[in-house]
Image (spheres, rainbow, N blue to C red):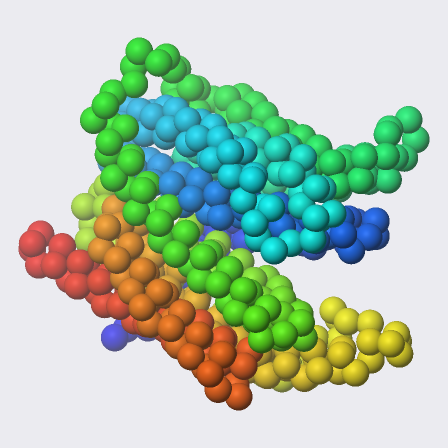
Length: 458
């Protein structure tokens, strides 16, 4: 293997990936700021937001997963220099994402009665329901925004969504500040104020994305002739065949981590708190792999359009190698600072909770050791998934992720977490097992498909 042929691709990979990474990190940090702002009102309000968001997060994973179908289709058309094919993929993708956003809002709206049967305090449920109405509806502009984002990504223009996300996040914090606490002439609305901040920021992101792209000459062609009459059943079905398995892949992973939170809650409060600390840190470093996954989807899709399969394989392997190097660096940092990082999240000055917090830190430190290895597997599986989406291969990967997460990972988490003394560490060993299985089998799938394509086109 000639290492130089892969490392020379690193610079372009990072150029495409960094705007996606910055946008995702910004979004993660604003989520943390949201929790801090609501947390200052009181624990009941924070619990209500957490409960409401657990519903929205699952629906969001389905919507975002579905929208990823647009990128490989646009990237392939861009690689072939076929503007009409790219325009149709964008128009049909936006049409389907709008319908899906409305559908997911409907599901959330009519699922609200379930909140009363989840064993949550009545005061929390009472606050969560009106919050859920507003944040649930914000899925409509969010998933429409995703259609624009995935189209721009497919055209190798990843900076537009980065700026849209940054502007939306700043707007969210400002609107939250005025409406949560009732600053100046604005009413004090508590968590409803937080919900207004969320929906307003997502509308701002959508409007900005539409305006900035439509104003660019290179995109004028793609915004022409958008009417319901031009919608074709065959193109809709093509996007659905790619989007549905992609949404299920994301759902399987999100549901696995939701299950881990639930298992840690069964073990005890300190385990649940430690799980949240380790997950917050691992999620932050995971954003780098997510950015490279989008890069894999774009570049592999481009090479598929050009039918340059040896280069397609080289591009894919270069992204996998870059991800492994980055994740190993993060793993070493986690190992070096596993006893220090948890202190960021707890208050050791309160004597009433000192013993409890010491236990949280001890468990978190153990989880970060597992997280060091876990994020290498997590990084590999997500970038290989991106490359496979670029190849428009989504059905087999959907089955692979289901088997890896739910037939391998989650059973191991249940057994080690609930039946052994490993407890929360056992839950995370299960996550590590599932993600490692996914990474291995997805890579074998990419290896098999690219070798086959190269042989067929000799």
